Length: 432
Image 1 (cartoon, rainbow, N blue to C red):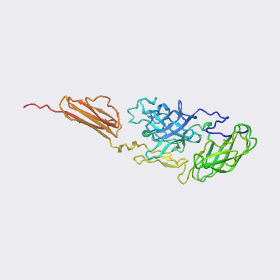
Image 2 (tube, rainbow, N blue to C red; image 1 turned 135 degrees about the horizontal axis):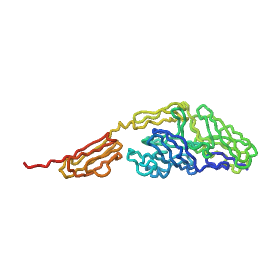
Image 3 (cartoon, helix red, strand yellow; image 1 turned 60 degrees about the horizontal axis):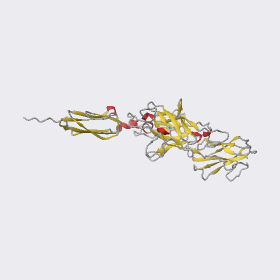
Image 4 (cartoon, rainbow, N blue to C red; image 1 turned 60 degrees about the vertical axis):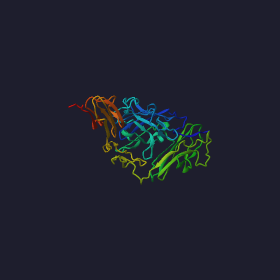
C-alpha cells in the first residue's frame, strides 16, 4: 500500500529529520534603528515542538544593545499579560509574550537585576502582541516558510517594531526561520498574489511507502475561513505520474483570485472532494495538506506595492517615509515622540512649612515632580539618597532642624528645570 503525504510544516516524514530548534534570522526595523536576530556569538532560536523562543537579538542603535527572548529574563512582565515567556503558538502561529531590552538595567549584559536610574523610567519591555490605545489589536505571526510578519511595540525607545517590509532603498527586510529547513517548508506555496494576475499554487506530494504503481489525480481547495470550513474546489485537477517508495512530485495550478484573504490547501489522489481516488493506501485520511495556507490578494487600486508611503503622524504631526509591501502595509513607523516633549509643561514643586522659624526649631520640606525624567533634591538636613530620582515623584516630605538660613532645591532634567525655597530665621526680640 502506498502512503501519500504532503511534505511540509508539522509533518513527521520518514525522509526528513526535523530539527528540535531552528535559528531565527534577519532584521527588524524600529524608530530606534535596525534590530539583528543573529550574528557571531548571539541569536534567537525557536523550539519547533513547543514554540518557545530563547536567546538574544541586538539593537544597532548605541545605547540600546541586547534584547532578551529568554523566559527567565521576562518573568514578572507587566500586569494583565496572559503569558510572559515569548513563544510561537504551534497551532495558530501567533507569536505572543514579551522580550526585554537589557539597556534598561544597570548591568546591560545580565538583563536582570536593578533598573538603571538614568533610564528615565524606561523599563525595556517589548510586547510581541497586545491591544493599542485605540482598541486595535497588534502583534506578530509566523507565516509559511517561518517568516515573521506584523508589528511589536517597544514604547519609548523603540516604538512600533516592523518585522517585514521594504527599506527606503527598495530592498526587502524581514525576520524568520531558515526557509530551506524542513520544519519551515510550507505545505503549499503561492506566488503572484496580485489583483488581475494569476496566482501560482504549488505543493509537494510525498510517497512514504511502496510504489503507487500508477499515476493519480490531485486538486487544490480554498476557503474564506482560516479553519478551512466550507471549502471550494479549484479546477482543473492536476495529474501526477507514479511515485516510487520515498519519491516526491510537485503539483501546480494557476488561478485568478479577486482581492481578499483566502486559505488554500492541496489534496492528493483525488480530483475533487467527492472522488475516492484510485491508489490503495495505508491511510486514506491524510491526503490533504495539514495546514490551510493564507493567501492575501492585494487590491492594486489601494496601493502600488513597492511604492512610497508615509507613516502615521507623531504628536507633532511629523511622519516618516517608507514603502508598501505586498499587503499594502506601509513599512514606515512614526518618528519618536521625543520631538514633542517640548509641548509638555514640567510640573515641579517644593515648599517649606513654616518658612520662617526660630533658630533650632523645625520646618517640613515637601516636594513633588511630574512631566520630567529625573530629579535631585538638595538642602541642609535632608537624609537618604535624593539624587536622580525617577519621575513622576509623588508628594514627599522630610522634617529637619533649622539652625541658619537654609536653601532647598529640586532640580530636574539635568538642571534645566528647578525650583527653590528658602527657610529664614526669625530674629530674637531684644528689650530696649
